[in-house]
Image (cartoon, rainbow, N blue to C red):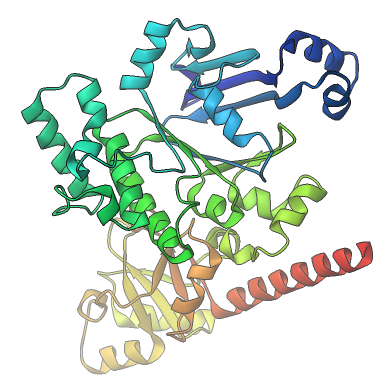
Length: 414
């Protein structure tokens, strides 16, 4: 497996091309001579579906490839699995090039390392849910008892416990897609390739499946390449997003980078209606906490700190800087009157808190429930910042300003 710094690269696509037609080399030569893909199509009838695409997918990453119909995204993911043979370029999985593998090597890779989940559920109508989900293990010649045990575990994981003996036509669309996911998870692949797996579902079921998929990914921790034409889905599921147009990647970056800094007019049009608060993380608007105290300190220290900063609150932490709660000016005064000597006696986990990487929109409902600021914590619940209401309002005003500017640009174009 190749590495870049501390990050392990699981999949590496290098200068990948796919040309459909009887003489792809002729088309490549014409492109090299300066022809556009449209000119090549007109002159030779060859379709350049994937054009010199390069990217890496890190181990454990959810990598989304997004684009409109005809952008080349589905052809690209099929090249990664060698369902379609690339015309030119390399596809490295743990350093091994799928493009040069023989049939036996390729078959073993598909059985044990790379699994594909399609838009159409591709379930066998004559097989039960259990037998459909166990199909990959059956192909691997896994013992029947072991196959059943593993499949029942996976069906429970995807929420289908109790449906083992039903047949596909007795299930809803969302349940059928869960069977497809269970079949993929059952063989325990290292890599999941997912070609618009939720696009055939109703919008409500689709959102539910997205949420369930995020929860599942936190459990199974696979490397994911996910294809979609829906930007909202891409922003929700992807750690990084590659946006394709005419067979090329026009921008690759985090959801935040895609929305905040679109590379060209094509991407700008995609993100025009996406609120920045959906992807801009809380860390962009948080600030250093004004007053921080430790749980062994007393209310007199708290009162002094708040008076010195002229504010009405202070955060209280344990010895490891984990957030214990918040104390207000009035609570500190009352604690002094009551003879309390340690803040741990007063503060009982009463602070609103959020992670620094959560989108700004998730802090808004929290801020609406209290006059106190929202604490920002890291993954170990250590206090790293705060979001006062004023910072939240300024962030929302900045978003409104950006939206108005974008609308003005579009009006000018019209």
